[in-house]
Image 1 (spheres, one colour):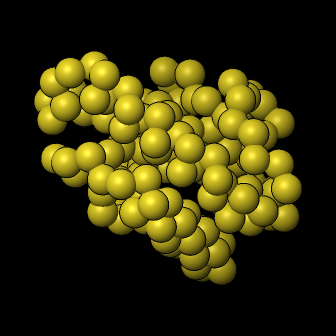
Image 2 (cartoon, one colour):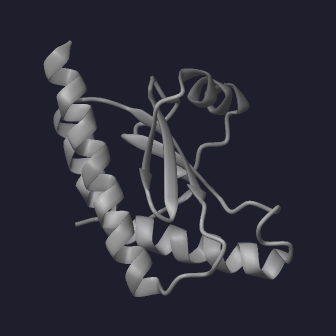
Length: 132
């Protein structure tokens, strides 16, 4: 079970980010909102993600950085849920993950919420695939 989260998993393409927000597909699981879009990515990885904490809520950079670090770690530990589904179905996904709470939540709580969020996402992708 590979739990690495290197550069290949980070979405850097501004065009891909714009497509994510034009598409308007999103899933909410407090304290996260995940925007996503099925698309061809310039990497062999099954997904790429942007992790964001809003400056409007967390004014100090060290607060934003800590929250993003916790989110990255929670995502890294639970990414296998999403990665297994995408690789078996030969799909690629661009993701934009936003932290929406006004308070910094504990790591253990974030882990549970991230697991539920990724499970919700895979369920929604399964339902869309059965419809098509």
